[in-house]
Image 1 (cartoon, one colour):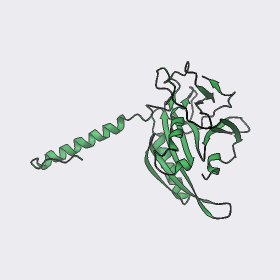
Image 2 (cartoon, one colour):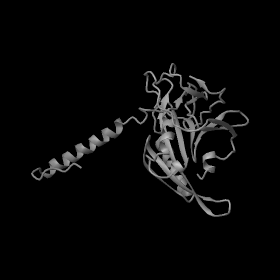
Image 3 (cartoon, helix red, strand yellow):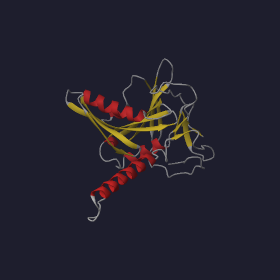
Image 4 (cartoon, helix red, strand yellow):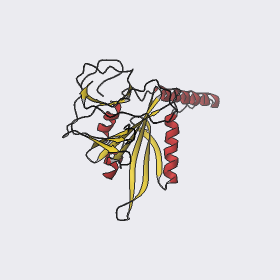
Length: 257
């Protein structure tokens, strides 16, 4: 993580890779990363009522612990939560979303050709990618839970499967979809989907390629998790329908924030 909530940013060690690239693609283009195929136990002398009471208390404590977890403590952040100036870190400003690339990271922007609005940005590194999209969310929260349920249902209806498991940003969806190969052979498209809810916004990150396969703490996952943590959302005050895509804008070029 490069910065934290309302404290002066500090530099982190860069990922040692090769060179940076920025590519703009049309809204109907395939995802670049997809192309890569990518107990507490009561003592014996306690009576049954005491045991039940202890169990209930333990369950309550567990529930409280879950509720207190702040999955965004280390990012991604809202623009009102961080200070971006004075750290000399190169960032790319997409209007509603500010991203922090590293040397060797490729970036592809999915653009609506009619409006020239950026609908999603995909960070590509080695044989993996992370597609990021930004959505409006209700102030009361809860949109991430709804979207996770939708993803699982859609995967099952499409002949695949999806499960919910622990991830770096809370519950993540691990999805496997059947896909026909170029020669008619049966292939499978594997992805992992992260959700992060902020003040009236939600970020969805879809991990693709080799990084989507394996354990949550696999080495290929870490750089993308760090990239996702360092995202900064500039939601704005415009009323929007929950679930509506928040467009980004084309960047003028990399700059120091």
